[in-house]
Image (cartoon, rainbow over all chains, first blue to last red; front, top):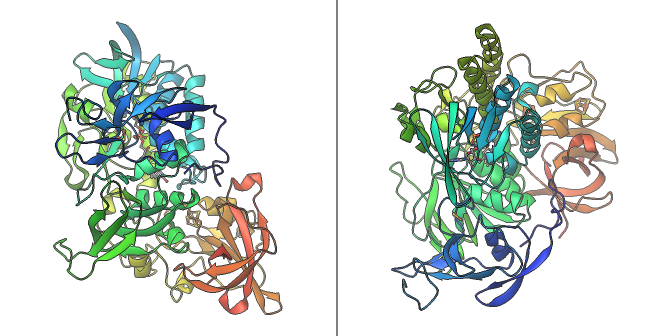
Length: 107
Length: 525
Ligand SMILES: Cc1cc2nc3c(=O)[nH]c(=O)nc-3n(C[C@H](O)[C@H](O)[C@H](O)COP(=O)(O)OP(=O)(O)OC[C@H]3O[C@@H](n4cnc5c(N)ncnc54)[C@H](O)[C@@H]3O)c2cc1C
Ligand code: SF4
Ligand code: SF4
Ligand code: FES
């Protein structure tokens, strides 16, 4: 999913490769890119499930406005992953409901 | 509380231009933007802009953004990022969130340049992952450098939909269709034609019936609408797709102006907008609005409006004498007026003329299918048959643009004083085949044709902004304006010198009979 070479923009700027976890699984991303970009590059589209109906949500605005992309990041729920930079070891989890991981209150 | 002569909310083209103009007059200026990167919409725009030299035409949006940012920084403007302005209050005080704190700043003058947000559209399945704003797709591919998906349906045929559609192709995605509920393509014909000749079909008078999929988008069904916007049963069409992009317009982000108590007025289809004087001053003295927040237009006009408001704020606080403001604003307004002419000007919204200003027929094929009909092309003033290599200009709508005229060292192309006029070929001037016009054309609407290169062949030169770069001898198929194969084509030359700024010139040999129809080239699979 990454655009390695682009006819207008050329090659992406160098960025350090970092490891982070998505629902406990270790995957690779680029340091400083939005978490949402790293997830999409790894084929992850669903960021959370809604509270009442459990419907999937993913990136919608990509600029921090709509809150569709929020996830549990380093244990903190409701983090907008489209505007939150990725770092080595960031722990990203699918969010279920308004504030929690699967099985916790809020589902 | 920290105090500035001018505080600007929003570091897009309008805000940065306003800040630079004011700083040039000696003001102490701070700009706040909620984004991590400055530039607003401008840094996502990787295409060459329209307009004239005064509007930085033929320069790509992100390069205009870099220049603007450098100018503001050179002039000492302080730019605060990750700094959303939460409120604008009496006495011209703002509340900003920086990190975990909220801070107050006082501005002796305030310019609100918060731009716009994308409109959304609800349809069954619209909340599925894979449905996103066209701007979101643009952010992902041009800023984050990640493909939003592999097969994309674009809803909306305005300039945003068309431009993002083409950028999706450049990023290596497939665009399965452009659909729009309106009966006519809403954006520039030249943008539509770029997509159509790559094989993207247009479905006007169509809307999305549903997005399919349970965990994410796996397909989409569109259907034709009747005059009451209801889908006509039996007209549904299904596409396999993993992404649906929505480009159904923008709305001015007027929140701050409203909290400040600036008077708003209902502008019909443009929404509720701030009441402003000629300098962008709102009903509250010392508070200005410019760019998309005061009415959706373009980056080119946003930058000029920003400069006008910046100069006006400088005048208000005594940094710029009345006469100097008048002179500066006069010159800027002239540049602004030039952009506000033509078929797509705000004042002509919703009207479809059947003739151009010059009296040529407006192409209905372009407006309903996204491409000029082969039979009608020869009727336009940019298209002439001639011996040797010569330009063929398929630019047929009155849009504010003239880089083609400036580009030609031989004076072959004339747009004239009025930049919305159609480019014409001067039959007396001799084309040397340099290709500068092809590379400078913001609409990728100019081709070079040599109708006879011997051996029953002709050559066609096409603007080409895709990877991998073609090589002489590569064989492939030429596509027509409608994106359908018309004939085989062998690459004679591909050149992309720095002066062409990434618009490559691809010259292919085609059987003579097809030189008037071959307009794109695809490598043999
Ligand atoms: C796909 C696409 C193609 C386009 N093509 C062209 C083109 O070819 N030519 C052309 O001239 N124009 C084009 N435009 C239009 C152009 O990009 C916009 O009209 C222009 O960017 C408007 O400038 P602006 O400064 O008013 O707003 P914006 O560029 O939207 O900038 C507003 C800024 O304000 C910030 N902001 C908003 N609210 C707050 C707040 N409360 N606090 C702090 N900061 C805030 C935002 O983060 C943003 O950075 C295109 C637009 C799109 C989407
Ligand atoms: S190819 Fe060169 S000389 Fe010929 S019309 Fe274009 S700019 Fe002019
Ligand atoms: S032909 Fe000229 S006026 Fe038309 S889009 Fe190209 S540069 Fe602009
Ligand atoms: S996608 Fe809208 S806030 Fe992240």
